[in-house]
Image (cartoon, rainbow, N blue to C red; front, side, top):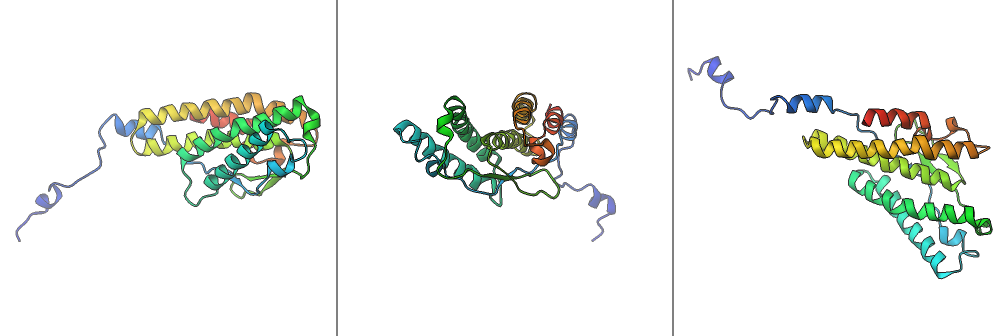
Length: 219
C-alpha cells in the first residue's frame, strides 16, 4: 500500500470531545471520590429496649430502626458501593435513630437497656482506619449523617465524570449542606456534652474541622 503517513494520521477516528466549555467544566469539577464509612458491628434495638419498649408504637420504631440500619450496613459494606442507595438508606435511618435518641432524652427511664448498644464504625477517608466503638447513640447518628453527605459527594463525582455537570452541581451542593450542618450544629453540641469523648479519638468524619473543610471543597 502507498498510504502516506498523513493519510494515516488524519483518517477518521472516534475521539473524546475536548471542546470548550465541557473540557474546562470537567477539569474544574474534578473531586476525589471519597470512600464511605463502614459499619463494623450489628445492633439490635428490639432486644436492647425489650423491657421499656413494650408499647406497640415503640416496638414498631425499634423494628423499623433495626431493619433500616441493617439495610444501610449492607449497602455501605458492599464490595461495590452505590451512591444512590447510600443516600436513600441514610435518609431512611436518620429520623429513626433520631427518634430513639430524642425519646431517651425526654424520658430517661426509657434509656434502661436489657442489652448494651455498642456502635462501631470505621472511617472511609483515613488512610489506615481503625474501628472506633461507642455506646453513644449520637455517634451512630453522626456517622450516618456523615455517610449521607459523603453519599451525595460520591454521586456528584460520578455524575461529573459522566459529564452531567448540572446534576453533579446539585449533588455537590447537597453534600455541602449536610456536612455544614454536621460541622456547625451536630458535632459541636455532641463533643461539648460528651465528657469522656475526644474528637481526635473518633473517625475523621466526626471532626468538625474536617467536615468544615469538606463543606468548602464541595462548595
